[in-house]
View: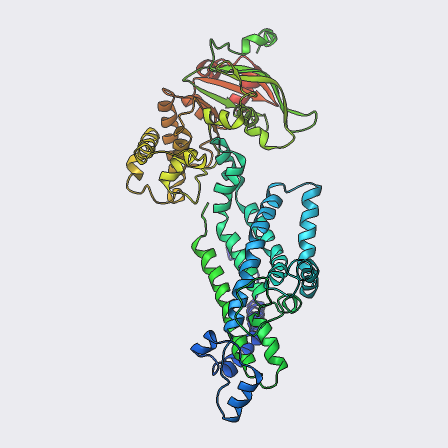
Length: 297
Length: 268
C-alpha cells in the first residue's frame, strides 16, 4: 500500500517559510524592546565613567563654587556622593525593617486564610496600595511623620513613605510563594504533632525562603531609586547624616539636586550610573538567591 | 447469594476483644448535613495491620484522618460519636498531643525539602523545639532508619537532603520520621500508590515487620495489598462500614454482597 503525504511539498515549503518569518519577527521585536535599556546604559557609562573614582564614594557632594573653580581650571568636578550613598542605605534599610515583617505576616495571612471577607479586603487594599502614586505616599508620610513626629524633614519620614511602597511586593510574593508549597508538607508537620504556628514558621517559611527573599530584594531595588516621596520627606542634606530625625540625602535626591544646578550637571551621570549599578546588583542577587535556595519537593 | 446473612448486621462486623482504639458510632461531615462517613463502629486490635478498603469517595481516608484528627484541617468539619485510644476520648486530648501518639504517613512521600535525611528523622523533635543531646539524636536516627531498613543505604549520606532519595526511599524516610516519636499507632493513607512495584514490595515487607511494635491502620486502593499484608480488613461503601473481619475470611467468604462485588472487581 502506498502512503502519500497529505501535505504537498509546496504547502510544506510555505509552512517552513512562515515558521522562519515568525521567528525573525519575534527576535526583531525582542531586540527593539531591549534598545532603551542598552542605550541608557551606554549614555550613563559614556558620560559618567570619568566621575567614578574612589573619592566619588568617600566625599560628599561639592558646592557650586568648587564646581565653578574646577571647571575654570578644566579639571573634573571634585567631591562625590557619599552623603547620598549613606542616606540611601539608612533610608532604604529602615524602610525594609518596617516593611519586611509587616509584609511577611500579611502574606502568610493571605495564603493561610485564603478565603473570607477579611482576606479579600486585605488583598484588595494591598493591590490598591500598589497603584498609589509615590508622590502621594510622600504627602502621607509628610502628614504622619514630618509634622507631628520629627517636626521637620527627616530620614525616618522618607523610610515610612518607602516602606509603604515596598509593602505590596513583599506581601504578594510571600503569598504566591507560600501558596505554591504543596499542602502535603503542612500535613506532614501537623501529623507529627507540630503546632500550627511552628509549622508556618519552621516548615513553610524556610521552604518558601527562595521566593520570599527574591520578592524582598526586588522590593528593595524598586524603592532604592524613588525620588518623589523623598523630596517631601527626607528633603536632602549636603553632609553625611546619621540621625534619622534629621533631613538626609539619598542618591536619587542628589541626581535631582545636580540637575537643578547648571554647574553640577556633569555629576548627574556618575550618580545615575552608581544608582543603576546598585539596582542591577540587587537584581542579580535576587536571581542568584532564587537559584541557590531553590527547593525541590 | 442468600439474603439470610444480610439481615444479621452484627455478623458482618467482627468484635475485637480489648481494642487499642475503639471507634464508636462515628459520623464525620466536612460541613452541612452531608456526612462523609456514617455510624462507623469498629475496634482496632493492637499489633495488627488493619486495612481499610473501598472505592473512591467511600470515606476511607476520612475515617483514617478522623483517628488523628487531621480532618479538622478543614474548617467546617464536625462529627458525631467518638473514638477512644486506650479508653481515653481522643476528642478530649489536645490534637497536638494526640498526633504524637498516632503517627501518619501520606500518599505521596513528603520529606521536608529544606532538611537533611538526619533532620527529617528527628523532625518531630526539632520542630517541636525538644532539645536532645547529640548522642540521643544519633541513637533515634539510627534506630528509626534501622526500623525502616534505610540505615545501610543512607548512613553515609545522612546530611544530604531527603529529597535526593528515590520515591520508595523517601516514603521509608517518612515512615521513619513517624516512628521516631515512638507512636502507638501508625496511620498510612495509600502509602504505596505513588511507588513502583519493587518499592511497594519493600514497604509491604516493612509494615509486616513493624506490626510487632506498632499497631498499623492502612488505607489502600489495592485489594491485593490488603490481602497480602493485613490481618483485618474493613470494606467501606458510600460512607458506611459494610463489612469488617479477618482478612482471609473476608476475601474467601465475604458476608455482604457489596463486599463480594467489590472484591471480585464488579465495581471500584
